[in-house]
Image 1 (cartoon, helix red, strand yellow):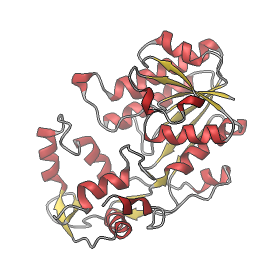
Image 2 (cartoon, one colour; image 1 turned 60 degrees about the horizontal axis):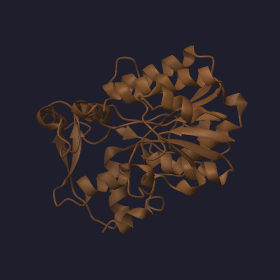
Image 3 (cartoon, rainbow, N blue to C red; image 1 turned 180 degrees about the vertical axis):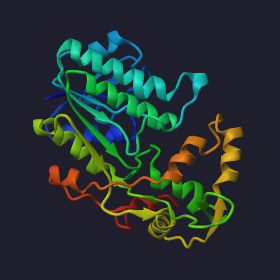
Image 4 (tube, one colour; image 1 turned 90 degrees about the vertical axis):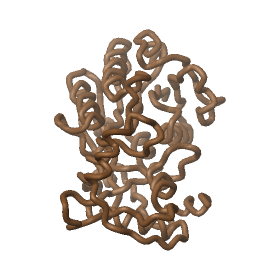
Length: 309
C-alpha cells in the first residue's frame, strides 16, 4: 500500500516510517525544502518537496496513494515565524482532507491528542477543529488520541528525555506543582504515558482494518502515574537520586506570560494549563481492538535514559 504521510520527519513520524516499511508499505512524504536529511530510510521512500500550505503540493503528494496519515503537530507556536497551531493542526489538516477527497484517496488517519476540546488551549482547540472537519468529509477516517508519548528520542524532542534534561538532572529539587496558595496535592496530577512504537503500530494496523473507520481511539499507557511518580521513575531509570519540593504553578505561569514567546524558555502557559489538567484515559479497549499489549512507563522501557549522562 502507498501511504502519504504528512509529518514524517519528526519524532513520531520516524517511528511511523519504520513501521510502514516493516509491514511492506511504501511511504510518500511531503518534506519541507532542506529537510530531506531528517527522513529515516529516505532511499526507500518517495519524497515530495513542498509545504503543507500549498494545495497543489498536497495534491502531488497524494497522487497515486492508497491512504493518508496526517501527523503534523507542534507543542508550541511561534507566530512571528508563521508556526501556529491554527496553520498546522487545522488549516494544514483541512487542506489535506479536502485534497484527499478531491483526488479519491479515501482512507485517512488523523493524529489528534488526548484531551482535545472546543474550549481548550490553542493546541487542544485546533486539534479538535481538525477532528470536526474530518467528520464532515466523505473519507474513511479514523482518529487517534494519544496521551504523552515516550520512547527513544533518536535526536528529537521526547517527553521523558526532556524532563530528565530540564528537571531530573538539575541540581535543584524537582518541582511538584500545585494550584492555589497551599501545597495541597502537590505533584498529584496524573498522566498515562504511551509508548511511541505502540502508537505507530496501531496506526499502521488500522490501514488494513476497515472496521475501525469512523472511530476515535484514545491511546493511553496501561498505568496512570502522578507527576511525582513520573519524575521518580525517570530518576530511577537514569540512576539518579532526586529530591522534590512543592512549587506553586502560579509563579511559573507568571514567568511564562512574560517569556514563553522566546524559544529559550522551556514551557508555555498553555503547556502548564494542560500539564495541570493531567493526561489520562482508558486505552484498554483501543489496544484490545488492535491486539496489542502496550508497554508500561517503567525503568525497563526508559532504559534509553541511561545514555543521557
